[in-house]
Image 1 (cartoon, rainbow, N blue to C red):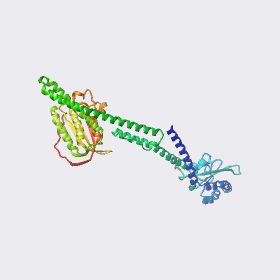
Image 2: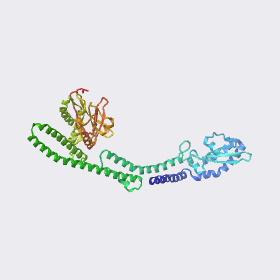
Image 3: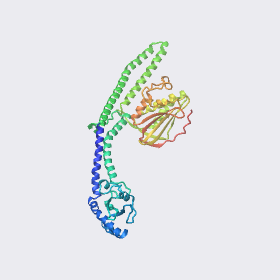
Image 4: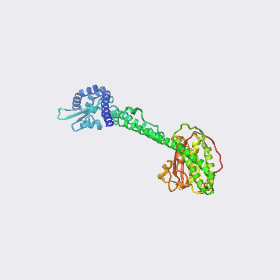
Length: 468
């Protein structure tokens, strides 16, 4: 209701402003004294013109009115009761409307602020049994504010001016908190949970101010919950490390003291302990990445060299599946960030592609520089020839512990943390990551990072055609 009241009052302020401006500009544009002078003598002009016409016809009437036109700059039209113009002049349509009494004249307020020339009309009995009408067209300087004929009149101009001004101020007042709310929402969506709207809205008391305060309260609660979750995850991971270390020590002692018949069970325990240790390590990585930039050392990184290093390590593992990692890159691209974090992020994507590409097929890695509305970016695309991912699951791939049962279950390896680590690492470097299905089959993951610079062009041997 408070917004309604403000809009309602703004409407009436616009109407009042329109009225005030109309009165002021009308008085300035149409001097009342000059209109009154012509209007006061119009009866005299009509009487003289009728007498001259009866005595000598149109020429005599024109001769009588010519001195008045020369001195007052007023053009006259004389009509008889049948509507015939007795001075022999062609009559514009607005003159005809005034003669017929269908248009307002300059002796009224609406007539002065309307469109078209300013006109006066008077009628009288000529004393010969006929009625006559005299229409006076005022000079241009006493005509409508924008000049005669075809241009919107003063009333329309004033209406647009006054209502536009009030609507502009009202729109700025109403949309200002909405724009700040939108900016804060975008920052939160990008991972900045400290974003708040606040500002001048805290001094308002309408519905928009309440929305802003509710949003800030929600954002604060959300930030507190996420931080609490991150601390919990970090604390649990650290607490698990201690008993896991003791378990590994005990496992080594058991291996030394047990016979051959127990070795298979001990190996299984050792494998599961290793997996648990890796899981804890990944959980700690996610907790650290969620903590932001604090304590993270950054430098300018040769992304091309980093990708080649990841590809060489992955090719060693890919030999068992008769696959390869093919890197297509013709330029040295530089980004700013933490080399260990970016190495882990890229490695997770490449190893994930190797894990799910069909045996005997290759993983393609391309690195290019692209420019968009946000500036220059280094764009890394990693594509495999695997089963792909259902469209409904593409956006969920970067959630912790998310796995697709039929294609990416536990038996293929992994617990659903690799791509989650990648997403947080890339977001920490002001980049974006997304996944999409390839038309020819398989999944492609695209990482975009702000470009910090380029170096000389690389010259490499031709890349072999990937097998499919």
